[in-house]
Image (cartoon, rainbow, N blue to C red):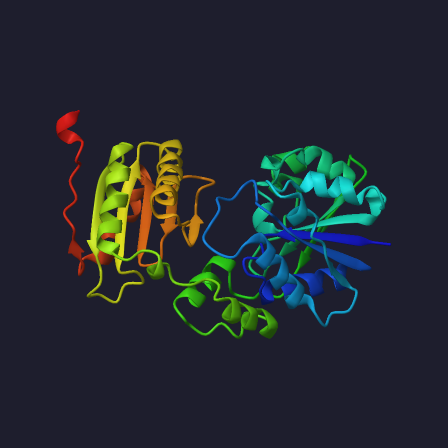
Amino acid sequence: MKVGIFGGGFNPPHMGHISCLTSVQKKAGLNKIFVIPTYQSPLKTQVDGPTPEQRLEMVKKALQGFGNQFEVDDQEIKRKGVSFTIDTIQQYRKDHAADDLHLIIGADHLETFANWREYKTVLKECNLIIATRPGFDIPSSRDQLPSFLSDIVLEYDFNFIELTTGRNVQFIRIPDVDISASELRKKIRTQKPVDQFLPLAVETYIKNEKLYQSLKDKIQDYTKFTEFCAEQLYAKKAINVKGYDLTKTSALSEYSIVTSGTSTRHTISLAENLVQLVKDEFRIHPSSLEGLEEGRWVVVDYGSLIIHIFYDYVRQEYSIEKLWKEGRDMGFKDPFAEKK
């Protein structure tokens, strides 16, 4: 019995997930796919939104009507704590042979796969299915693969790779659904139509449970909130913190901050520190957090305030302050300058 494992945050589960599941099952000839919501991803910072239990319920609603070809597995939710894929795979290996077990990941996770806990063991304990979207070029040679994978290739045949571990890697192209979970959360929070991206049962659940509410309900004064964030960035030696009041423009947010770090590590540190301080002071998480893995351009989204933290060299390259020339410069100055 060929079994697939498909994990993720599912925050929320959307038609892109459904498209991936149905396409992979058919093209890979899987008898069943287990869909496993994470409790907390080890490579993602927590964002504002539903509880793990609510995400689990949304996945169940998204998959109702598909019969027994997809089964929702709540083991990571029950286990709590950080969810590591290797732990889940080892649970499945108790009932399934490694050759019959297939881990399904998106092509966007391939480059960071070597950061997963015990990824080498993962590649011994199960096969790997990489779901690709249109526009993604399937590697045509060993040289185009990430080094962690190219080093263990036994045979290469276009979209199918035999590994020295005894397992294999298969690339499967799936129909494109042009939406990401972070974009979808933003649409819901700003009350934009989402019916084409969500299963009806999931959309109804979100409305009934009042999920993904605007952060305006928790942040009463965004001007003061923006000033607070700027001060915390300066306290950690951020470079040239600029704030813009965009309330009288057509910008996507009402306020924006752009600043720099001296290195990608400093940029990541600035973002992580700010997220923690906001959580401590306001008891909220960002609605999304992008770019934290590389640290070249980190975007922290608090709804009406979006914060851009650049590695300074990259900031000079993009000069995004030009986008807000019609906004009001809030005139931030380093409150710690005189104390240095």
